[in-house]
Amino acid sequence: MNKKLAYKRILLKISGEALAGPDGFGIDPIRAEDLAEHLQVIYDLGVEIAVVIGAGNLWRGRQGLERGMDRATADYMGMLGTVMNAMALMDALERQGVITRVQSAIEMRAVAEPYIRRRAIRHLEKKRLVIFGAGTGNPYFSTDTAAALRAMEIDADILIKATKVDGVYDSDPEKNPDAVLFDNLSYIDAINLRLEVMDTTALSLCMDNKLPILVINMWDHDALQKGLMGEKVGTLVSKEPR
Image 1 (cartoon, rainbow, N blue to C red):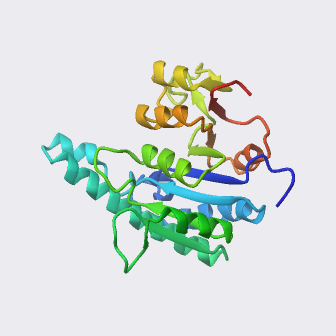
Image 2 (image 1 turned 180 degrees about the vertical axis):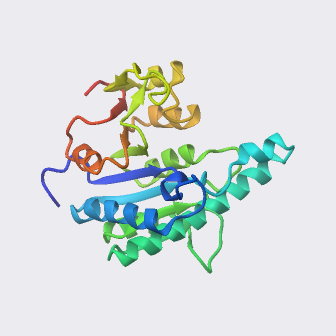
Image 3 (image 1 turned 90 degrees about the vertical axis):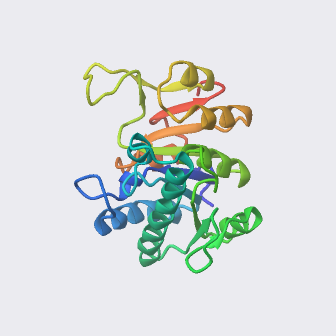
């Protein structure tokens, strides 16, 4: 283990759009390979990595709900989409030489292991990257909440939310060029200011269990590594300022 690392075990939350093609939908093998190469660098540092990936590139439940779809059905469809993304990322990672396991909260033994907490921890201890699919296995919970829950269950040192911006801003930086980037936030401020760091359930879960959240730009290839070394990067959400 590299002594410079600030965190030994991480839970990385990635949006499904990280695998999407230029139009924002589908699974682009090139993007999957880029993401796998990025994760391999971190894996080679000796970090134990677990991943939760969304499904926004394959299914947006909100569109179904707007047409009258049952909420539970829409959520289950999204969960199945996360398993497809997990399999695509697993394939790209293994072609990079990263030993990977997919665990699904919805049992589908032909394509993934069932989620078993102790088995997941054992995989991490054996230096296997673990991807958690199908959210929590329950409707009405987001992949943000699944990431917070799994991070707690595997005793992760930090939850890292990888986005397409440099951290958490006071407004949308793509619409407001004067948007201000926060270096630090308390859990309460993140909830009260409705900054969309993560949903309220996920933030509350992290707050109750004192799990720090680091929000970074996934495509800044230095940001994740700097964050793991304890350097100041992105936005840290925690009880105390860094």
